[in-house]
Image (cartoon, rainbow, N blue to C red; front, top):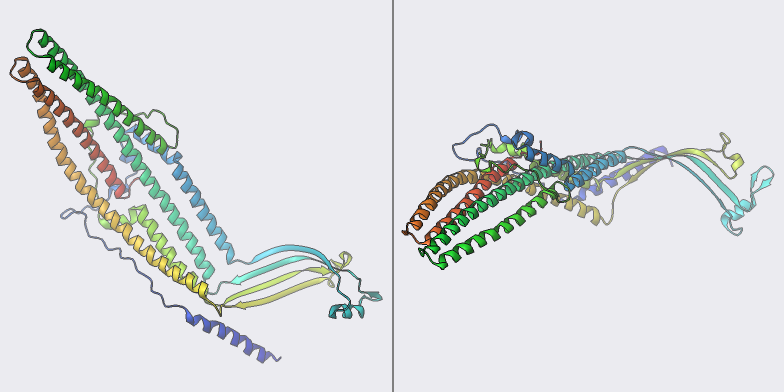
Length: 478
């Protein structure tokens, strides 16, 4: 075959391989909508977000900072995520190697006896393997050398796959940051819940002491026939009821302590805390910044963005499967039928080089399905990115409103508690002077206890709302 005819055949083969790629399905990518309102609250325009404040500076309680530090270091989910990040990093290394030449060192040894009444057997009967030496009945085959294969990445399929691995690695890092953000918030929520329960228990004990004093007064009045045994029994029942509630709160304290220990990655043990002064804590005033800052500050949004970039490139990787692949194979080494000839040079020296062109031609269902799936996953990733942005905006807006309403709620409950505390003394005086019934005293004490309980719960909600807003803004992972 002439050189010109060979070139024509090669060109025809390449053209045929390229033409079959024209049957790629027409798919449409989705562009994510990242538009957000200019502000979280009408009339409020804050330029700096509190999300940039490190959690070590955000929380003032040294006991809480110590717990969070332990949790970040020991939490099992954080450590599991660290291994996932390591796996993603290793995937980058693996994919980088795919578009580099593969070089292997190999050796083999074997032998073959050819049947006499075959084509090869008949030929060997009439040939000498060396001068004056006929073919042996059992012919050896020994070889060793270097062998190389290399897929030429013309369509950037392998390089794009590597970049996909890079984006997935970066997304796993943002996933860890989001996990840390949630962990910091969970430890803070549980810590303040624990302190609130301590204050609930102390409030209950103070109320029990007050009722026990009242019980003594009622008993004394009974001795002077100024009240009945019914009043004594009702007081005794009220004291017993509240004493029983102590154990309910103590059990709740145990549960919350163990929840914190789980977050810290350790077995149950007492939690060091500063419960005194809880009611004097003033929640910090946070700056929400502008909504667009959420795209930079929220790890979950950045993770979704990176996953979308990876999904975009995966479409290009899947599309490249429709195009022909080009490869080169080469080898150099020594080969002989006997070991004594194996390293004879140049007689035993062998080498080969070949080019390879391959393209899908018939039954492209698998690569077509992969391409369609890649496109569907890109659309899915775009929607997930949009959803993460909407969720983040809603979380911030909800907590801003929650903080405002809780502040108003707390002020009114503070007034309620102050009024009821004063009414207890008035009711006691009226009861002693026989101008009020014992039920009025009991109900007043009960209302005051419940109001103090709600006041403590509202204070906890205020602090939790502050922590939730800090988390919603994207703080806690720095």
